View 1 (tube, helix red, strand yellow):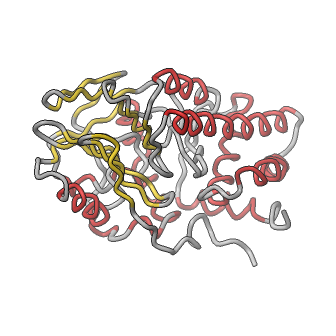
View 2: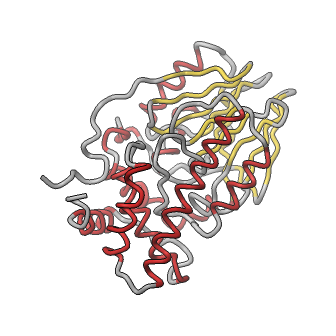
View 3: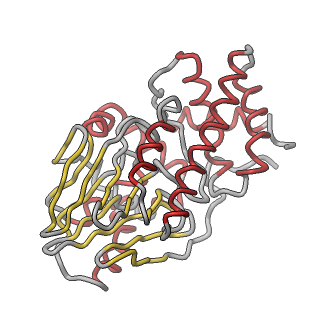
Length: 322
């Protein structure tokens, strides 16, 4: 029997955890589903990634209200992907922050991404009819922006290309807590269909240099020791390097996308096949690797719902017996 497209077979609800990292710092995680970060300052609350719909965001708000009644004034978009940001309207925030590259990506491909992701992740878009439209930032920065929430210092930083060309991380220098978005995953497969594999490892090195003591990845458990933070960052980097180097070598040898996919899937599955959304991501990831290798497409091509289906199903028969 052929596999169901992307995450269509993933119908089981996940157990949510609301983990306290330090005074006023929390992680909303759900067994490999997209994470949300919460930062409580002296006078307001900041949310890092909003969930996919306003209805899904209500559960985050409910948990915030269990620990504070301060207004939620700030939302940070770690990047433009719909599953991360389309719940923003639920928070009624005064400020929505994003890097300039993220803003440009929303203009260029936000609507196509919205339609693509709803098709890939039906369970993660509960109440999709409640989405009023694309989420647009009203505070856009180039490289770094510091927000003081009373005495709490929050640095919102675009350190380089990686998962997308606009990724933003949120860093609390005093507490040494990092909210990484999908630049870092833990026990979950990095999605790299819109990535820059040539640059992502160097961006991860910059995250390592921060020496975080706690880290909230894009997917996976909140990490509460320096050793776990390093493990997650290095694990993400190792996954990406193993995958990209395999595809790059295959393409240089004149192999087709299907041949590179079969070889690289077989290489990756023993070590990473148990990671969340592995079979969902690998067709997108390896297709982007193949495009990028050799410089044919230095920037990712736009995914549409139609392209998703055509690409994903065309690659399944090459691994069905692996």
